[in-house]
Image: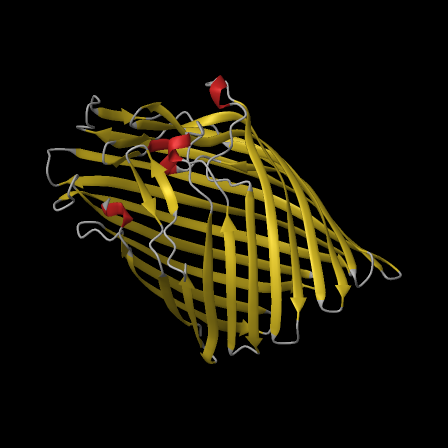
Amino acid sequence: QPYHSKNARTDMSLMGKFYILPDDRSTLSFSVNYVNEDYSRGIQTDNQTNETAYLSATYERELSDGANLTASVYSQFMSREVDLGARPDYVKRDHTEYDDVKKFGQLLQTDFKFADFNTFTVGVDSSYSMMDKHNEYALVERKAKAEGNQLLASLFAQDEMKFRTGAHKILLTPGVRVDFSRSSDGKSSDTAPGPNPPVDEKFEDRSWVAINPKLGFVYRYNNMTTLRASAGHSFAAPTLFELYTVFTRGPMMMFGNPDLDPESAWSAEIGVDQWFMQNLLGRVTGYFTRGENFIGSRSISENQSRMDNINEVQMLGADAELRYDINSMWSLYGGYTFNYSTIIKDENSDETEGNHLPFEPLHRARLGLVFQYLKWIAIDLSARYEGERYVDIENTKETKLDGHFSLDLSLTGTIVRYVSWTLSVENMLNKKYEVYSVPTEMSEAPGVLINGYLTFAI
């Protein structure tokens, strides 16, 4: 199939930062980040361009002894343009997708250091996003678009307490976050969605509030052994794409769902960091998450799916890692992750209960070698394995992705004080493994993928 062809890709990344010192107690900084990606799937009529521009300003000031203020504002502009060829020969352009998202945000945070062992942090952050998505069709009379806005606002507080008893050190970090989300002005339309009736809908505004506590604990028994534990509640509002979009790929259609509820979860983890010698470090972490209203795609017909909530999901697993420092420049590392993520309860479909969550393999492994010479150059050669995984909550066997190995190389370095570079080579052995699959087609890894970045930071 044409989708098995090699990809072509180019990347451009620019970053700049500028500081001003208004006085000896404050700093004003500005930063600019720009990224442009242009790639295809090896088909002449298929091409995708992603562009992101990020601007920010941050003011930091020492208010008094033990108190510091941080205030920042930012704006982010993201655009995506995708050209897709017409089946079956892909000679002509079928349609072009245009996605534009504008996001504006702010953060205001104050840290109070009451004593050497106690720092209290309180703040507020918020963002406002606007999505505008539309498709232009070349071969048929058809128009499709989706739009919507979303406000996210949070109040947060955290207390960091440090205690010491001889060689033993304890860090206790309780905190709480109050999240507010409001999605508004949602619209979705499609004048000719294949065999389906036209879509032209306006959706009611919806909002949510969640209180999310957390607690972190670190116990450093001595210079060789550290114990870690944490627990907390999390909240994630459905994205504008998940709420309002109408998405097409050939005969496949994906519908958003304006009735989605936010995801929430209780999570806990416990781990230990152990130095066996001065140069051999082992880490083991066990984790457990019980979530509600997980958002995923649900098949509603042979070629259609819809975003939907699943009542309860569970993630249980462990991660282990070893790092051996041969000397100051060379290190070896290896790791293994076992992740058992399943659907516990689904009121909309008894058949999915007990199934695995999509794109979550049971087994992952990694092995690598690192060379570091001061700040001038770092080389990371790694082999990684990702096990079998499903692409849908129905766990369809025909679209199940096989496990695969990949050999990757990453090089980073500094040319002069303000200029750094990165070169990455992914899938060096040119393996053809599946990365996505639907009943009508599958997509494979593009083979060897080389990316280069040059960063300017002033």
